[in-house]
Length: 227
Ligand SMILES: Cc1cc2nc3c(=O)[nH]c(=O)nc-3n(C[C@H](O)[C@H](O)[C@H](O)COP(=O)(O)O)c2cc1C
Image 1 (cartoon, helix red, strand yellow):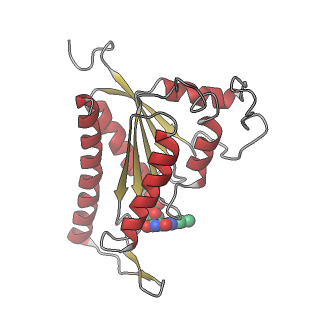
Image 2 (cartoon, rainbow, N blue to C red; image 1 turned 30 degrees about the vertical axis):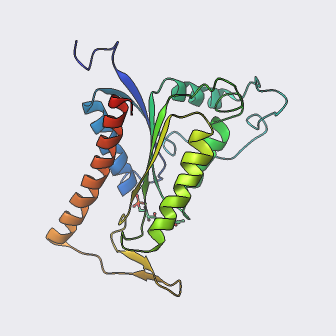
């Protein structure tokens, strides 16, 4: 039997939160999906913008604390199904205000709902693993990065994934996602550098792709090892 045998294959839900298909985020999501497929995963690619996901909470999907069996909207139930079918989830998104963009936040708000994602003695998402691939405009040497990593881990790994029973949650922070390097100085000014070009630019993107690939490969290796 090969790793592509259906009885052995694992499913990865790759969630993309970006409004442009030519963005670095979308590019990174496509490469991530290809890498997961090469590693033997069946990939379900969920492009929240392309699928027209509405991140706004509504009455149908608002939790009823007295009823964890509440029937949410059909749209939300379809998304819940896709999460249940996945062994691993990989969310790829740009960091907005040291957090996730609204479309991803709304997907979590509406879909990772009471009675499904949390609020049960046997959580339905228990044992799943998640990788958050977070693209940040800040450069790696910006002192803001350490706090950004910490706040994302607290929010996404502790506040959400662990709360919902995931057995592993990794925040992979990909700095230097902007063509023109961004840095905040001591006074809080945003310093925007010059865009590089030619071979230097190629090297910058190759390095970015390498860092993204290493995060995905490490995540896959840990899943395989059951670490
Ligand atoms: C509304 C908004 C908020 C942002 N907040 C942050 C931030 O808190 N930290 C950071 O490093 N970059 C921040 N950025 C920069 C984005 O992370 C960066 O533009 C993005 O990762 C580039 O990837 P893309 O080309 O796929 O959009 C922000 C950008 C926008 C538009």
